[in-house]
Length: 49
Image (tube, rainbow, N blue to C red):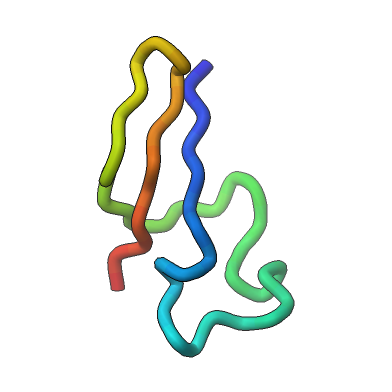
């Protein structure tokens, strides 16, 4: 398994306080990979607008 993490600051100044309005698990969004940690099976992601 590979896990991706998006920091709330990458959502921009208009980031909602209730992140459930942004989407739910399984929704498709466009992100940019900003860090890659293969040994940890993790990606750092940034939301693409």
